[in-house]
Length: 332
Image (cartoon, rainbow, N blue to C red):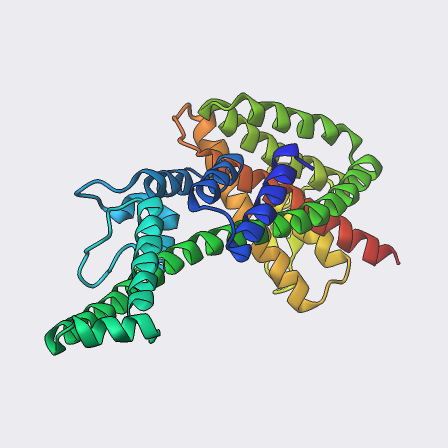
């Protein structure tokens, strides 16, 4: 488990405790939230929390907050109907709420029904003054209610962010455990059926680590070669065509690795539903890898994003896991 992810979990838990206990000042809460965003490499959250700390400019498009725009809206920072927003920092909003509360309390004390106050009112206050004080007190109650509601709502938005992040980390742990199980399954399958393919896996890892667009394209080309190795091991190329489950003849030569993998899965006696699902998954994966391979062979530049490359590598790995699972079930 990544040390940063483990630290992010602890920070998220501590942040939730601070927000739910209502004892920490908002400055300390924001600093902890910014640290969480940094650990998660969440640039949207870093921008949002920085603005919550320093205040917003006179003109600002909340679309710039990306995935964190929803927190600004849910917290009442932005009114989406009018596009108006509160530019003050959250610290100032907290201070305003506390000031309104203190003023309300002082007004309440000044008008409390003590003997001294009664005497004072009997001697000095006029009816107009009493009415003025009551009106002032009612207005201050309203001011305090509004400022407190706004402050609480904005704190709740940070709580939502901390909760979402914590759940994402927890889900990531579950996914990591599941993927680790799939990895063991794939590793066992590779060792048993096509040990030379391990070199392809190493090459994929090295190329992804390089970080350049050319290396990402090369990594996906290696994914295609990995699937070809698997096809060679489970259904070697042959000249005669293979008749699929729909009665259609398909070529199963060296380059037709997709058809050969499908032929192998069909021979395992997969149920119709499972087979159709695997066929669809392989069709999608192979189409992506084949396009990159063909363009690379022609010397055409390919713009492959890091996320696209990662998903393709993971998809390749998991599909081999599907083949391994069906192989094990077919041998039972």
